[in-house]
Image 1 (tube, one colour):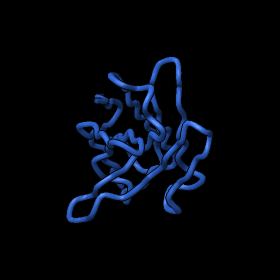
Image 2: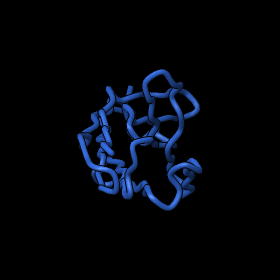
Image 3: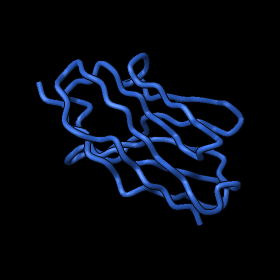
Image 4: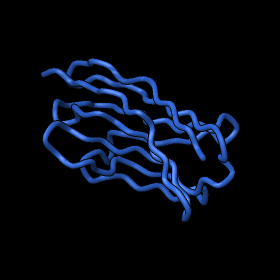
Length: 115
């Protein structure tokens, strides 16, 4: 119902920044929440940040003060600005769009932070 395409991952040195983008298409009018999750090797997928259509934003404690989620409703795109990156942020980052009736995932984009 909703297709998500992520971009912006890559390799960066510790202390650097990256900006991830996720463009949504399809039945976007049904989306209530968009957000970012990540999965590091050998670990479970975890929440990074979410943004609701009503304006509520939540971050995981590990990224508060360093990452910023934002949404462009005209472009149907959600962004994740990541600053002060450290090696523990290395993971595949996934975009998510959800409503009470569905949840869609992007294909994932690799973020690697070197020390």
